[in-house]
Amino acid sequence: QKEVEQNSGPLSVPEGAIASLNCTYSDRGSQSFFWYRQYSGKSPELIMSIYSNGDKEDGRFTAQLNKASQYVSLLIRDSQPSDSATYLCAVRISQGNTPLVFGKGTRLSVIA
Amino acid sequence: GAVVSQHPSWVICKSGTSVKIECRSLDFQATTMFWYRQFPKQSLMLMATSNEGSKATYEQGVEKDKFLINHASLTLSTLTVTSAHPEDSSFYICSAGPGIQYFGAGTRLSVL
Image (cartoon, rainbow over all chains, first blue to last red; front, side):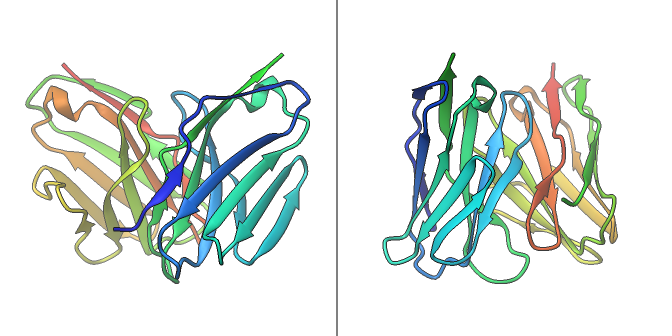
């Protein structure tokens, strides 16, 4: 069974703080890793993709991947109330256009 | 990013009727599209993989005769919920993409 695990939260952080979201996956051969943001009642939107070990930064967002530990994280710097949403970690197990395996999501609440 | 269009965004129907949902890739050709279902406060569950010109691949537990998928062109996949019942009420979302998966806006189905 291919699994992606996330802490469901809610994770509450004050405005301006760093929010840290974590995700672990079970399949060591997983190829690609994604973070999506989903507002209530809306479909997911892509925030970051990461494919190799290390950090990848895009604006206020940094994705971190450690394949040895089967761990991927998302850091949000200078958190804003508009960042309040559910963050979904998704993993592509194999190469090619195969479906993503999603975690259950972490609900983030940024308090003004 | 790539654009995936989904229609309708919301549909209400009577029990026993059929509902068709369309998913279009607007700026790329999609040989493969994915259909997900999401119940309130739960994560996305993959229903099926839609393959252009061939039969869809359904996930375990998804009734292929109830959820008919047609992927007749490189830009359009349709999901038809046949003889809908209240328990089919959910948020249905399609995704597609050249590598990275982008999501349609989703269709909220309410069966009375």
